[in-house]
Image 1 (spheres, rainbow, N blue to C red):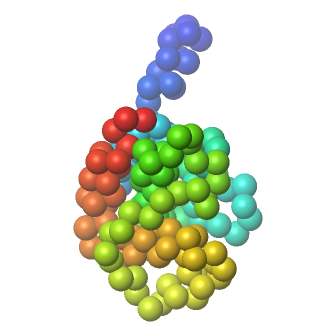
Image 2 (image 1 turned 45 degrees about the vertical axis):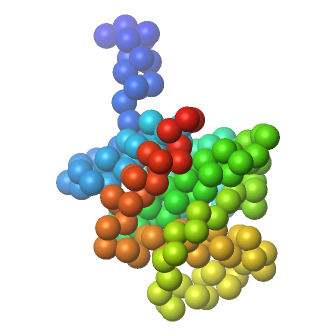
Length: 160
């Protein structure tokens, strides 16, 4: 195979790790993220100790491979997908693209998160950031989280 053809295949093939092979629903979410302009990187995020991260300036999502061992891959990917949708919502309202997580817009999903996530949300002193995280934590705990994340990406991120 020529280097050119190999490069083309890599560019159009979603970066789905083998661990997701048995989870077609989450694979579909990853593919939707990538089609929406948010490539997914399966490596340690640049912020130590995190399971996932939306790098706003690069519009890329980092997923720590340890989430597969911990059994939390799907909720982690959903959490970061919510931040991607928040990016799209903010970009649609602003004259320029968001440059940091604080520039994102809450979606007003109307979901109440479990009291168990309260300590994770309270670590953020900025009320805007708390609202962003509250939505992400709330949706990742919903039984239909993947379908809803895909719907939100298709609704808010179709122009990107």
